[in-house]
Image 1 (cartoon, rainbow, N blue to C red):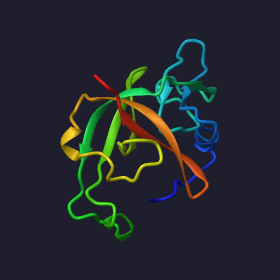
Image 2 (cartoon, rainbow, N blue to C red; image 1 turned 90 degrees about the vertical axis):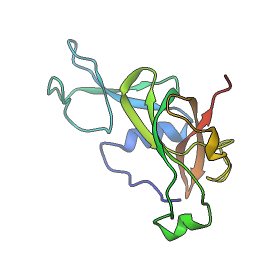
Image 3 (tube, rainbow, N blue to C red; image 1 turned 120 degrees about the horizontal axis):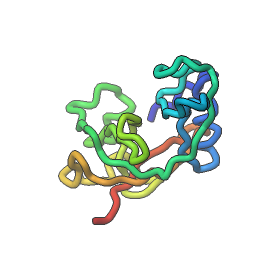
Length: 143
């Protein structure tokens, strides 16, 4: 699995992930308050430089997914078939995070049968450590 690249704008995301919290940057301007991801210094809506990190519920829906054939990166070949998903958060469907659906937080990337994936499926975030960094993964919610 690839380790995330942590930059100044995104560092708080990873600091909260280390605590098991999914937080998203939000504009702190009184007349805006919109969420934004990926993190950046300036609000794309009102152009304010004021920001805060809001805790999310960790719930979302699969917006899109792919099963790479063949895996493009050699480190992933042994884990195939695996999924890569884009999840829209329930707090704001325009906030989308990329990850993998797994059977449990520390499970291998191929732990969910690809036939169980569908657009709109409800998921819940879970965190696991990869190379010393807690990364978000997604668990299918029971219907």
